[in-house]
Image (cartoon, rainbow, N blue to C red; front, side, top):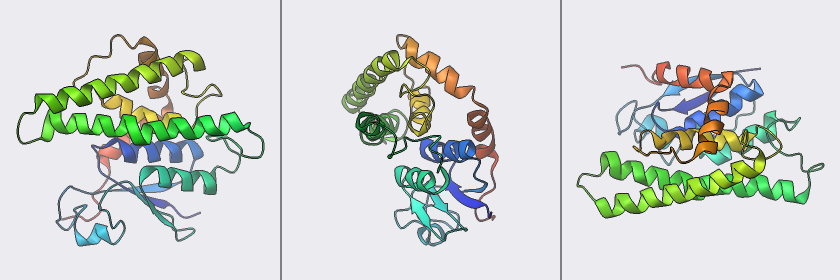
Length: 224
């Protein structure tokens, strides 16, 4: 089996989600890091735009099938369809209940459409917006905490060790890197005791530890 190529940068959560999935599925891959900007090694430069027209990571090249995927949910869904034939990280459509299938989809969608974007916007106003905008920062901080309220309640119902009650799944892979952004967003999550306990459980998984050590040390896609 040929190694897949995961295109990433070392600061955003989405490439980490994909790497966690691949580590758990034992899919071999190489990492290539890209920079922000439009230079030779830039996400908006011509070299990367040949891989992903949107100029964002993650992007994944599967040299076994010739498939190129981008957008983290599309990438993970591709990996699950292609390499999780035993359904270790996702429900089996032919065996799972209709409710289990919906629960998997709805919690993945909640992360993709709500928690992730709200955290991303908060980090923009905390770190990158060229002028101070406390109204915007306050709005997105409130939305992140609202999402954490929802997640805390779900973890209490699921037993606290995974977002879904059936055990560790791709849903946890989706959530963990984004929830871990709370430190970068300068949020205090002391009141979210169940989320903190879940973060510890997921963070101690060897696959998770490995990718948080390896992605920052990966080689640039184009060495200059």
